[in-house]
Image (cartoon, rainbow, N blue to C red; front, side):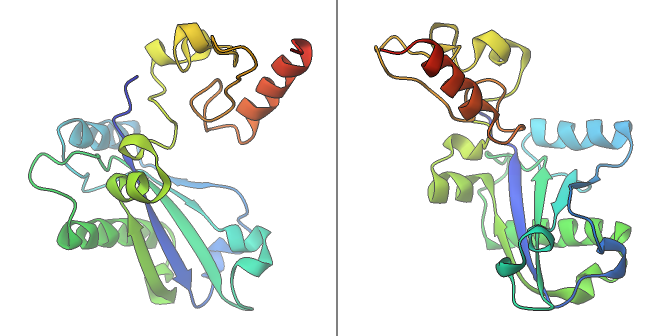
Length: 199
């Protein structure tokens, strides 16, 4: 199974919510043009962090008020094109700071005043995601979502459709179809399979 983790997280504690983010309860994609996306991916393909990473910003405290004190907020930036293996060196404090600066600038370009609202930041590289949460190579999808690893070939052909060769053992994580992009999707489909085939 190919993993090749390529995503980092930058977590923000905000003193206030910039006006342009009021009411944004979904995902704000800061991807740029298709050409910029391709260049960003090319950077990571060759082991470099992109100068202009693709960022998906979420504000969970707008949906769940208890995540932050009154008047404060948290923001989560999912950063694509941050490779697990860097071509030159390892993920250290300097490289994490560099990534933080690029991501904050990218958000600030689309959301005026964002940088001024930041109280605290934590950067989780793919290496950190692996160490802290057990995601192999930091791949939250539990395997790349490529043509040879999707649909009936997820996670592998012999263990697709949720059942494994071990009787009564079913898989229901992000490594199964449809992956991590549809929250709860793999578990729901696996439960349907279990119900249809009681042992």
